[in-house]
Length: 149
Image 1 (cartoon, rainbow, N blue to C red):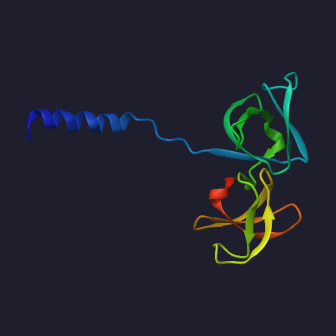
Image 2: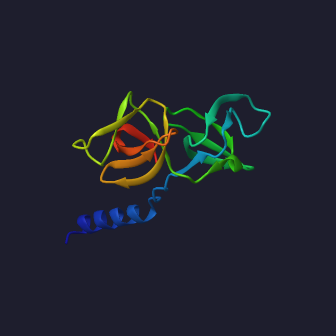
Image 3: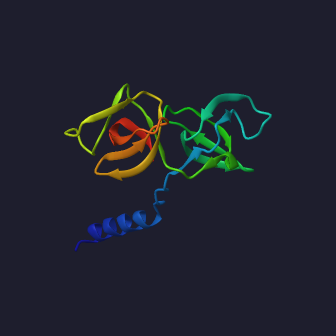
């Protein structure tokens, strides 16, 4: 092996050893009927959004019991950590999606969900999610049409 090739391989190996690992995405959901998303970490900051139970959020930072979060529309803010939970939910990111009796387009449509609707996650299978809406309707929706976990 040539000296140049050996040096290239050594540099590639070194780079791979010192490249930081990708961090797992941390998600939470709103665990109260309604909470405020605020402009900063504390009640002294302006409430920018009101979020309903089950609303999924990505945690981007933490400070004194507050969580910096991002939602499915890339809105950001802060929520009080103790008002959230680790209960998987999805939010509908497309207009009028079909809820089906099984995980695939060959299954019967049993209902519809609208943009921004929160759905409780019951199961995940092959690009589909089994969900339950606020009225108790249970069925399957393509994961491509949802955001969350």
